[in-house]
Image (cartoon, rainbow, N blue to C red; front, top):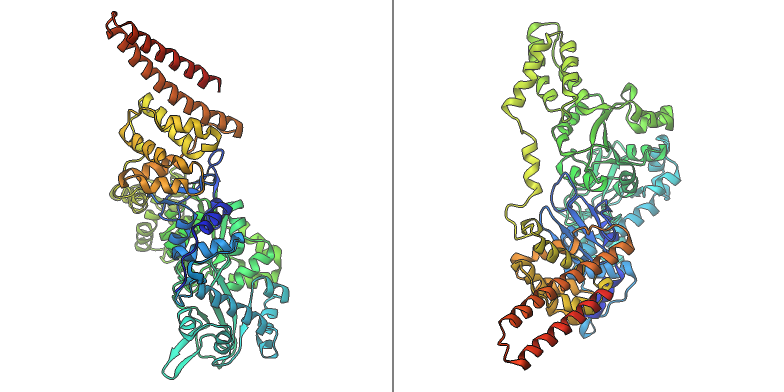
Length: 615
């Protein structure tokens, strides 16, 4: 067994890691004020960003589902790795050498994600090297015939799997991987006579996750004597889930985020053709239909929280393409962005379009896009004989719900008129048909999405606090202390967390901070405070640690954090002053010494207040 990683090394890794950089590989983050960024939560489906990250604090929190933690927690939950694996990945990223207790080294659990990823990476390098071999001439010819030169193959990591039963198996076992690891990674298949290479005599494309790690492969048949499917993909493994990966996303994610656009094509060569033609936001599914999990991934990368973005699907005009379009339309409401369909002239896919008409023709494909619902209406009407009364009636029944589902209400009247004109039916009849599904199912598809934005049960949070001035002051001061402790200073914070609070929930947070003042502002300070806070109040702590503060400029923010803390302390001083004045009024005038003692305390309190205000 591996030894336990030294705590000092863990703290060193965390101090050298910017949590926003790590999370930014999975989620597009946008500024939410000084020292704060936010994006769409990767842990639940939502339409507006409620996932906040505070790099200075090293913490994230989602105000929608309540998920929160540090960078280690994030990797554990996102990639389903152990605590030690998360630390090892971050250490490698930050260039920190880890030390293990009892002299042991890193854990070597052969079923772990890191081992499977390493096996895939080694296999990828092997396939790329084999593409240069004499045997791979058939593969190079295939690429060349589709307009892809060696530089294109290198850019997309294309390789070749030799037509052998065990060449990859032998190569990877020499590299230190076990048979069980390779079977688990989907690189070997299990037959009656043992294991053998899954990919043989095929071109191979590496499929990478959003962070750029190779999680699987897609392999294209090249010869007629290969009786397998045209495309063979990695099976489901602990690291490869076809419903959650998109080919080319690692290359496209930066431009998808910057341009708020994604182009969904149907194959690996289509992705290559689009990128080489200048459409660098193209991605493709991997052996499965475009589904809900793919939408969640794209929305996080796009920052899909407004109607400014666009999702463009390219479909073949054949029956299979029409079926794919209808499947995509069924989930269209899950996007905030506008959805479109682009069909190339003569039914060419992007790869063939680039080959026959050049890069400019591929770029023009996006200029020819039409709204998704318009495309679906046309496809629906094409299934009916509009020359007959029965055909027009059937077409109206089928098309009216599509118009009724148009998200932008300002567009519905226009498309209602278009539908009436295409059908040759009286406008009032079409209007009635369009209203009917909306009246019978007023929130049909919206209901499916909305509940995911809020948890079923929720501990106390910021929204549950009273709105009176006293509670607001306590809340804002704790936010400043948790997020910008060094800007306030240890002495002021020490004083602040020993003042009286009116709100019980906030006083629980105050007490936890006071308990950990010996580790003030150190790495892991917030995590230590979180461990001490009782469960029902932990969500409140995490929200206070990431909620945006009102000031925008860096200097203004520091001044605000200091001022709000001073205000909290000054309020407590005024309370103590009122108590002393009350004591003085009630005090026996004959007790001269007692009266003088109270007066000295009042003078001392006033001196403290002036010193506090003077800074």
